[in-house]
Image (tube, rainbow, N blue to C red):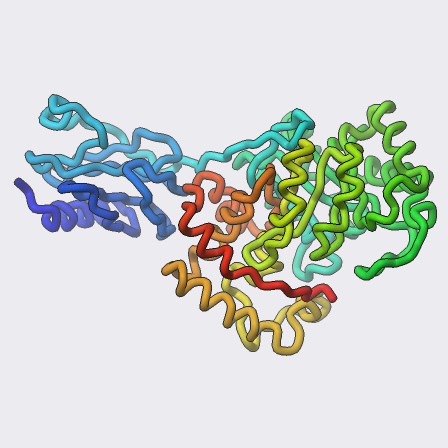
Length: 435
């Protein structure tokens, strides 16, 4: 029998000869040794014989140096048979002993996007959605129309079919509209959500304002009409209020306007984007049945939505859009003491004073507990958000092609285990950097 170490060595040599840049040995299953090979140096943690991955992979026979890629979007793993061949899990004895067949390697297999139902709406949305705030070129410095269009188009190519923007996001709606207009069919199969901002300023604290001052029906209509012109569309799939206070429930004429806009075909569904770190401040209106969707901050640090909001959404069939899953970059590992941002970038305010040092300390503890490297942090954070009860899609800001490909690929990664989720629950960190 070929020893597993020899098989592993030969597999690695073959991978190098094929141009693969990284080879990893996976866990042992019984007396057999499993291998995975992938390209571009993206580490994948094996969880079983068919662990999903984000890159094309090869099944290698270290004895005769045959190989193949036969399962789109899945990590091809194999066991070392008594003859020294590497064969697929579950193969029959005849298959295990048969000579290998020559096959063709395809290193260009794209990751697979998965989709979920958005509550009771009937919309099927990609697990990874596109958060278009950064395309507005206002708060986030460094964006421009051309790069934004390229990033958004690439996201759609990779299966992203849900885009979230807002009237308040400067040029964002215009960039989204241009990108969609250049897609086949003008992006008609992409679901677009936008938001109506308050007519008067509303703080994070209770404002004491009447909803007729904040969201009069005429304001909703005027804002939507502007959004439709910017987007170049005759309707949006989802219209959201960009802030909310539960004291407004049952007051004002905003709901009558929402119903009218639905009847006119200008919006399909209606929702609320919850105030930062106030997931309980939407429960009253949610329970009236008028909401189709709720958008809320939900990440490893901000876990408060799972206390009451997410269970209530599931009970009432309300779809959940998770936002800020990477905590404005804190859960990517890029925020450390001394970090700096371009002049005028809003993150200079968000990560001010000793906040980067606080983040660094929390992230290092998280990585140590999970036993992972910083390169795996963003994927872990997105998978945590996707594990939330009733969560249909997680919107992520992605201004570069590299970030688009990295984040879209997370949908094809294995879900976090119950043990990992239990560990991450201990890293809940009540904070509000928006205040």
